[in-house]
Length: 468
Image (cartoon, rainbow, N blue to C red; front, top):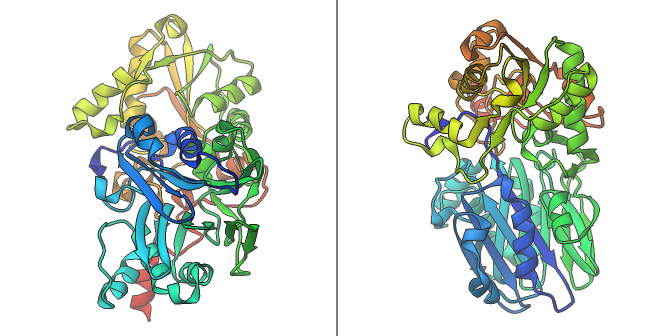
């Protein structure tokens, strides 16, 4: 991945797991669950199943619908499975780094899939290598796998417990053995993970929309720091630490999660609409039409329209069959690709004062191109409004973000950003406004806005070592 071509926060990964005492096709259910989580990662997909004795794996690069077909799904037999869709944040984008990772260890076979990022993965990897461990991938998921395998003599549940105490960062993990499905969420709950049910089958997955896709019933979110163990006796929960607090990544609600998901008691769509209403209260403007950037800007645009009384309209038509724009080989081609992916609906914007709503501005190149496209389509004014605060800092917890020097908000005033993107005015929601849109239900990870993280970052850790 060429990080220089990134102009948007990129999704992390999605995980899905199911365990049943009934005779079900766990692979097919996992396939549809991953399909619903495709927005969280489009680089690779994989499924591991268990028939009670053996674990079978199939994974490859590409979308879920490209990786799997009737032939390879039919070979994944069993009543339990885990699956993964990946967008690389740690480790390069290649088949070797696709998940789940399957291995044999002292107690049998084990597979693991992980969403998030460990800030101490390099330190642990080095220690494990010094002890003779051999790594086959460059992803931190294999670090977790090796930690669990090393503690196997204590039993799988104790091994997972001990491994979780050693790792630091964000993680939503699903683990499959011959007879158990295990889910783990980091002590700050940065990455989402929830529990559902289909009849007597239990499901653990990244978002509730995946439960809906397989006609499952949402039970609850996995608590921060909780280890959930599902086997033939049902569901058991272990809370290994008392020092937990829910600090869900704010960008799950702003951008990453599907709008039909509910995470930690907050409806994603409602929070985006509320953000749009608050955005108008904080940054009002007189205009003829409100336009949202598809897809994550649409709900905020609806809220902005409701609060302002200005009509909401479709301003851009999205081509849903275009790949990621950032993989094109040059900045010029990448910016031109925006026109392929989004095309202005001239009849709606010509001769009008337009308010353009987006979820964030990272580098500013796409924002500038969108403003240019509206002006060329005849918009008399373009006012840009953003339903998140100014992004000033990178993320260390599983979101692929540019270096700080490449974040336009880290190096520019709002007025300078306005000049860069070419809009007539520019306004961001405030931090207080954003929290209000969430309903002030709990804490959130706001590190990309404030530079204050719920877990010490690699930079902070290095500083602490120097001070010692």
